[in-house]
Every structure is written in structure tokens, then in C-alpha cells.
Image 1 (cartoon, rainbow, N blue to C red):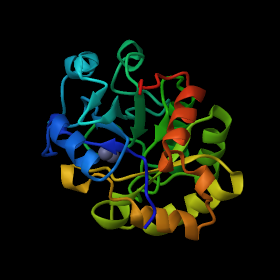
Image 2 (image 1 turned 90 degrees about the vertical axis):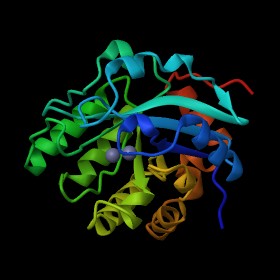
Image 3 (image 1 turned 30 degrees about the vertical axis):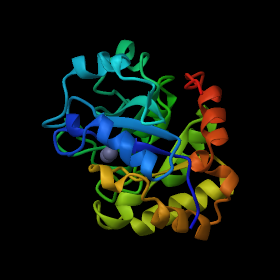
Length: 244
Ligand SMILES: [Zn+2]
Ligand SMILES: [Zn+2]
């Protein structure tokens, strides 16, 4: 089984429907042999999610817990057709890692491929944004090729979400395959994440890895396979590299 160096999309109790603390998550990541863990709680527009103060105060969280390097992040909600997010730039600028995606009950009302694609492309153009998550969600259809092209243009990454294949967002698999094929053709970087909502699920990445490889994605394209890959990508984004 292939060994990853980081899981870059995980949720703590602060998300309101996840069940582990950051410390428990770091310990779980350590036990799985991960070097990097991004804590990416849902943005404030999601019911039960943390207030903006939670994200603004994230710099109090240690950069290393249980020997695991911590990226202080968020999974921001796209809430408008022009890629508007539910956190202001001044808070996003303080974070190490900014994921964006569509979620129900967060105030987003796009219902066509055109609007969803425009919103995602605009979010990818936001200089604070690093990656788009679970783009294969069938509830938010998008033009995959256009989104992959936007990721390439802005030097961002597309996620292949392991939970979309195993736990949630039923109907994603075929879409994820199509996105992965476009990503392989365009030779863009991708991330493969657990989207864990409980510490035990951190590092569960094998289903998405299998899908990526069977779609033609090479190991070199997968940012979080190696610590070097993560650090190179963070550097390309002008983000902090957690000191060794
Ligand atoms: Zn999500
Ligand atoms: Zn998530």
C-alpha cells in the first residue's frame, strides 16, 4: 500500500458535525505515519460551524503536535456566483491552507453548470485559495475541463476526495474519474484527502489513490504523497513551511 506524507483535508469538533479534537487528530496522524496534517474546519456559513473568531484565532494552535506538522486551514464555503467565500480576506490571509467547495445550507444557490463553473473558477482566482475540494459532487455539476484549466492557470490544486468514494456524496465516483482523467491530461497537481470527520479516518486515502492512478495520474502529480511535494507546493503558493 502506498504511503502518503500528509492528509490536507480534515475536520475537528469545531465543524459542528465532526468528533475529534485537533490534538486527537494529530495523534491519529502520527500513528498513521503522516508528517503533515491540515485542519480544515467548515467555514462559518455551515450550520453548526465555528464563528469567524475561531478561524481568526487559529494562530494559537501549535505548528507541531505529536510530531506532526500542522497546517492551520479552513474549508471555506463558496456562497456566490462570483466565487464569494464565507470568510473575509483578512482572516484567509492568516491561514496556511485554504480549501473551497460547495455545500448545502450555506447560502449558495447556483443550480446550473454555467453558474457553478463560474463560481468555482472565480474562487480559484482568489489569491488566498489553494485548492478546490470534492469537485465531483453530483449536487453541484460543473464543467470539469474548465475547472481543471482554471486550476492550471492559477497554480492551484484539485482534490480527489476519498470520502466521496466511500462515505458521502453518493454518485461522485464516475465524476471523480472524469476529473482525474482531465487532470492527468493537463498534467496539473492534485491532492488526495480523507475529509475525515473522526480521527480514525485520517490517512484513509487508498480508494482515491487507486482512482487517480487508474485515471492516468502519475505519483509526481500528487502533492501530498511526499513531504517534499507538500513543501514545494506551499512554497509555490507563498505559504509558510512548517519548521522541522
Ligand atoms: Zn466539504
Ligand atoms: Zn470537508
